[in-house]
Image (tube, rainbow, N blue to C red; front, side, top):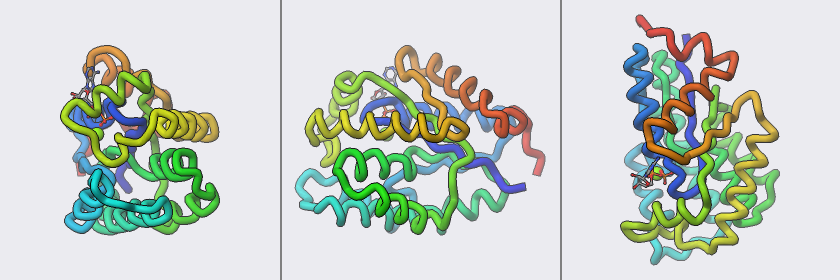
Length: 215
Ligand SMILES: Nc1ncnc2c1ncn2[C@@H]1O[C@H](COP(=O)(O)OP(=O)(O)O)[C@@H](O)[C@H]1O
Ligand SMILES: [Mg+2]
């Protein structure tokens, strides 16, 4: 059977990377073979694109930025995600195409239809089985995220990040069967329990989450 594909989304400092790790740990405890990856990056080529995208000194136009994210994604899906799913592994990905909808369509104001089509092309139509949207206070998240210095995206205005948050909320409302919204407040372990319960609330996942894979 094809593996489960779970993505973690949210704004800067929402706790995505922390929760991706904790979710992967919990899935392994439940017997899943887990493939952990992230966007942008996750492949040698993608990691070089990530370096460019996050470099505060890089001048990148909104359209070029969109295409770079999609290039990184196309490489990641083809090289890592699709093969892992075919092997029956559970894939946990820190950000995926909903981030492009939120950042490039809502944040940058690029044409939503163009973003949708490029998301579809880059993924060859692969859609996550479930997406966790971590919601955290915008200013607290930005503060958390930029403690060790800010990257090119984190350096964007508060208004930009507020539009991004609106984009994520809109995606969650439009696709309640795929996207679960989880409050990112509280201790990481507390948030992790909320993430697990939210995933288990999705009927297609409930049956598969706790079941150890024997293959
Ligand atoms: N629930 C939490 N409570 C307190 N600090 C947290 C929590 N989750 C994450 N952090 C810390 O906040 C910072 C950003 O978390 P991270 O998981 O990297 O967020 P993201 O990947 O969404 O940007 C990190 O320093 C992390 O250790
Ligand atoms: Mg992160």
